[in-house]
Length: 93
Image (cartoon, rainbow, N blue to C red; front, side, top):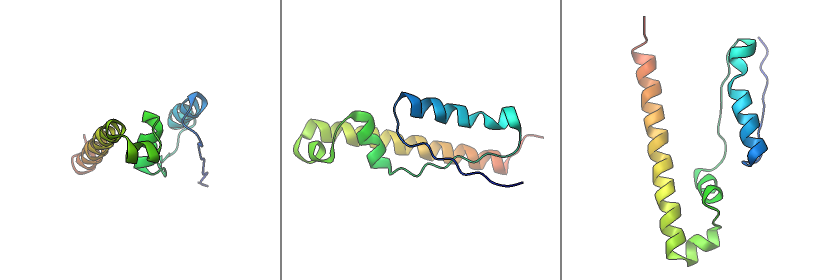
């Protein structure tokens, strides 16, 4: 089966809609899908919080907020990776 690369640029409303639609392609058309996130984690968190790198450097509240969301994002990634590995090692029969 041929592969198809799809990129979603932007994290606004339409970016979210397209990302959600792409995640359901497998259920509609069958086959394998693989979702890759190529955006830098810090850039994603600063975009989510609405702070620039200058805000993070100069404002201790912004720095604390971005650091907290960054730690949360890393924790979620680790949990997701762990659960994915557990599914691979212990498949349901």
